[in-house]
Amino acid sequence: MNETLTKFQWLGIILGFSGALIIIISDLIDGLTIVAFFAGIVGLVSSSLGIIWQKKISSDLSLSGNNFLQALSAAIFHLLLALCFEKFFINFSNDFILAMSWQIFAVSLGAFLILMWLLANNKANETSTLFFLVPPISALLAFLILEETFTSFDFLGLLLTCLGVFMVSKIRIKM
Image (cartoon, rainbow, N blue to C red; front, top):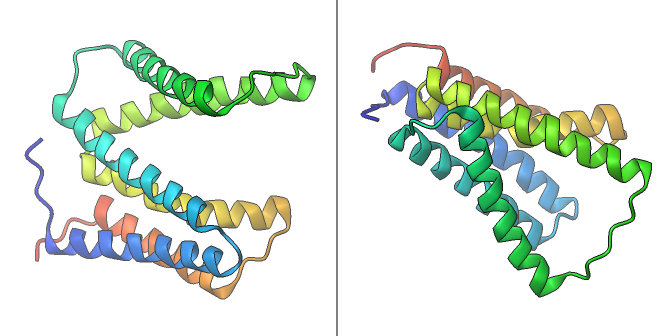
């Protein structure tokens, strides 16, 4: 992998993380549970570490082969959780089929292929900082689609995160 970060890029990472944190803390104040908060933190850390690991091993597998292996391992993991905690019942309604189709084709296949393309064509640190955009973009979409409030803290978090990601991925300054 052999990637080094400049001080300017470290500043961008700190800004991006701070912006995401502002929005998460704002949601905590507005009633987000601690369990949901830590689930998000575990997901963010796991995704970031997974990107670094994927870039490090740079597998010779094709994108579709890689996608299959990751989906299979996730399916096994979630099957084990389901066996422990869930009752197996599915209501095959039109809404369910539409939602599952979106999850399978747009989220799983589409997003994964984009992520693998980004990893193949960019540095791991540039790609992993994109995850900082998830909380502010989610807050913005919740405002636009679900008519939730978008506070000044949310705007500040969005601004800081966008600036941080831009600093890491686009600006080449040695400090």
